[in-house]
Amino acid sequence: MKQHTLLAIVTFSLFFFAANLSAQTSKTFKVINKSGLAVTSVRLASNDTYSWGLSLNIMDKVPNDKSFDFVQKIDTGRCIYDFKFTTDDKKDYIIENVDLCTAKEIILAIPEEKPPGEKIEGDK
Image (cartoon, rainbow, N blue to C red; front, side, top):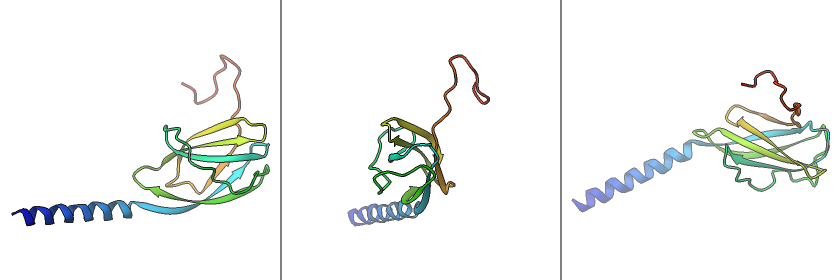
């Protein structure tokens, strides 16, 4: 009986491990700097965790209107990620809710600042 239980646990574990492997895929993304400034760092985090990984860019600086590629393993069960980029003037900007399962390009742009009290289309 103990052998059957052990065999069942091992079989289930192998199946679970194989299922998790098939849910991950490597994908190449193009990051395009449209911020108007040189970008010194681009980092990635799972959505809403703000646990930023290492810088994705291998260049010291990514000039405006230039791009770079990076490869990322994506868990197809968790597609939404956030990006943080730092400009040459040491300011950080966050781009939230990027669906990496469907995206091919990430555009780095500084969001427009709205005057206090002004409503922008799409605001609730």
